[in-house]
Structure formats: C-alpha cells, structure tokens
Image (cartoon, rainbow, N blue to C red):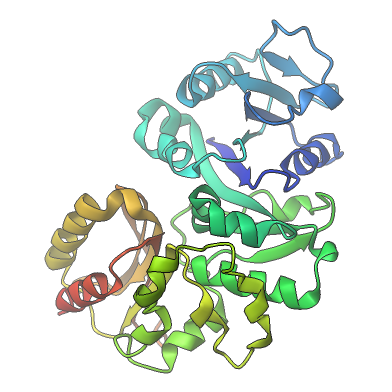
Length: 361
C-alpha cells in the first residue's frame, strides 16, 4: 500500500501551523507523519511537541509523528518509509509543510523523480493557504505566492471574515483566473474538515477534470482562438504592479469584465476540441513544449480523445515531468472531446493552442 502524501503550502501568516495543529490533534484516528522544513517562521513543535532538541523524529501521544527536515526531502521520506516498514514507526499518511516562501514544484517532483520515493508514496494533493487580508499585496509582490496558487489542488482562504465581501469576491476571481482547477474554501482559524484535506486525489490521474465551471463558461462562448482578449494584457506589463496597482479597487466591475484587470504572470488557459488527437503528433509537440517551457509550466492536466483507442487518455504534469494513463472507456452517449488546462508563468498561449490544434487528426 502506498503512503498518501499531502503538501501544505501557503503565504506567511496564512495559518498553516494552526491548520496543522488542528489536523494533528483532532481525534480522527489517523496517524499522520508531519515533515517540516525547519527554517519555518514558527515551528509547530514549540506549542505541541515537547522534545529533546537532538531527537529529529518525535512520536506524539495520539500516534502522530513529527520530524523536521535536516538533509533533503528524499532522504527524510525514505527514512520514514523504512521505519514504517520495519515497524519502528506507525503512521498512515504524510503531510509536508513547506515554508512560507517555498515553491511546491520541487517537492511535487520528488514524488515522480525518485524511484524509491515513488515506490513508497502517492502524492495526494497540494493544499495552498491564502491569507485574505494580505493576499492582494502578496500576490502583487511575490512570485512565490503566485506559484503556490498555480500549483494548488485545493485553496483554503483564511481570515476571510476580516475583509469585506467585495474584497473577498475580487480575491476569489483573481485566484480562479490563476488556477481554475482548484476549488476554493474559506476557513476559520484552520477549522477544516479532514475530508477537505486528505484523499483529495488531486494528483491521481483520474478522469474527473475539475475546472471551475464559470471559468470554462467564459471560454465556451467562443472558439478558443477568439477569446484571446481576456488575456491579452501584454500592453500593461510595464507597470509591473507598482503600489498604485490596487487590484481590489476594481471589484465594483462585476459586469463580467473583472478579470481584465488582473495581470498576474501565473495564468491558466484551456484547450478544447471535439476532433481526436493524432498520438504521434501530440507526443512530439508536448515533448518539444515541455523541453522549452517546462520550468514555467506549473500544472497541466487533461482528458484526451485519442485516435486509435476507445478509452479516455488522462494526462497531467508538473514542470518537465509528464505522465499519462488510459482511463475508462468513453460512454456511449458521452460526447468525445479533448479538454486540457495549462497553468503556468507567462506561457505563450497562442503557441500552445495553435500547436495543439495542429496535432488534431
């Protein structure tokens, strides 16, 4: 049985530690191993762990295990898996808490690249905590914050009760624009149901492609080359989010035009087509794209209609690492179509869309 792993990332002060404490101390009967990057602002152990500083792995009273990363994540994950196999430690799942400014990409890649880790663990999902009070500033000023949003499978917005409904709505629109596939939930002081945190299967290659329906509706009105305008922000790149670039001030504009104001470098776009892909052409094109743009491609996912198979092809990737799987057979009544979503930093949307178009049969 693979050990499910969850990556918890989020803005400074967004309440990751509160969320972790709650998850750890709740009586859900699950034994959780927590791996912390030890240069965190506030270590969880100050409050709930009483330990001899020399001891790196601590077994807690409710059976949870905590450890801080000394060397690198791979070594820590291997050690934990070995101790679990030998019966020295007993835990059901792993939560990796990254520091406030960490890029979750390399953490996610560890689960795909390292054979030993891949044989023991299954990356379940990346959770990103967003602090509603400081979010707009952090998103404007810090690319790491924008990357964390782009990587998320699930976004938790903390401190939502401290901002006005209009500001919250503006923030939600902005987050959706950066990452349409991550559901957003407002949480109160880390008060999250365990079912919202674990076994989300955000990284499993499942056939359900979760994309915010409103985002797709926006794209559905037109053929996918015709709605370029909603992202053609290049003309205002030069202002580079100065202090006067106050996004929330635009929240009165709810006539469907709100998203025109966001000029985040992390963006998403969707490719859809009812024509099947030619497998060889698609493989060549994706290989080339990933080669060039891999570092800027955060998450990408799709359900593909491929020539030569009656099954859906489920595809996803992180940076340069891409995987695909045969999914279920297309239903008899089900319209066969390609649907792909790409989330990345300044990706050349037109090159991607035109290139994909050329891979169709």
